[in-house]
Image 1 (cartoon, rainbow, N blue to C red):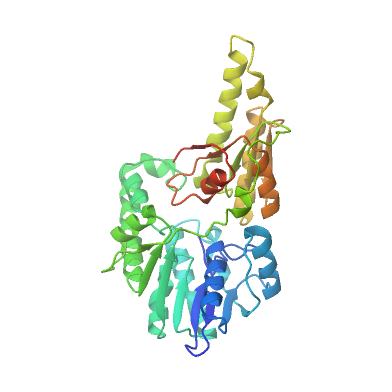
Image 2: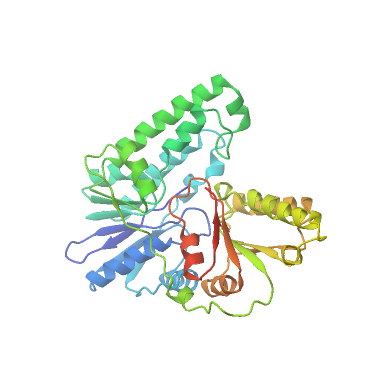
Length: 371
């Protein structure tokens, strides 16, 4: 995960900051950032807001995307300042020692942001804690809102147990020496991450899962406060529960990232269809008639390549006619897709909150969840 720092200016206070989740090229600020800006505008209507961006997007474009993608309304009382070093956060720049490379890149990016404007209150929603010491040295108060720790104790445990996962290659898991080296590397990064996190004046997290990890990792005298992420469900709650369905389909809402485990969903769907065919009644017509719709966004080239791999795997499993990939849909399109679904799937490993599960529940859809 990469990040870009943004700032919010409080008139007389004269500066406070909100960093946006502009993590990969062509992505937009996260829902938490937009809601942070909206909250600031609500309590301080005269506040001037500055958001640092690496996309070349105007304030009007950000407003439009907030309404389209998140159904959030923000006033136009903010300024966008462009940054140029966000490429330093791209994971593909660092095929080895990715966390270390991105950590150093975030420091450089934070320096660029702070040289553009030194805020009085620095509110980070990206999780790149290595910018906090810089902000404190510049005289800022730091408020951290963490969605997912950069290094989790689960990651350390899997390397210790030599378990192969998306972030622990099989070649490493099979070798005790490589696992030992990776453990030492992870512990060094975790120690630096914990020290940097300790520079925050206020620590806020999105769930009890994240809170438990932050308590273990950050050098902080005070336990973090849990504030659930913004999830506007009003439009979903208005969906009719007894509507006629045009076609049976399951829905999965998740970015096309490795930890979302879309392959497991495809395998489970393929297995269900095989079981239906082998049924003594020569197939369950409902299962065989059903579709699976994978709804998600692609943050950059790696996600697009992963999507293509999933599509190829779909063909390999013989599911090309009953699986549909819906990418970068608007909020209205998502609402329509949720309205027509019979149930939702969610298979993220180490789920830290699960906004899609909340959306399934708000839309009245039963959810199959495995984490």
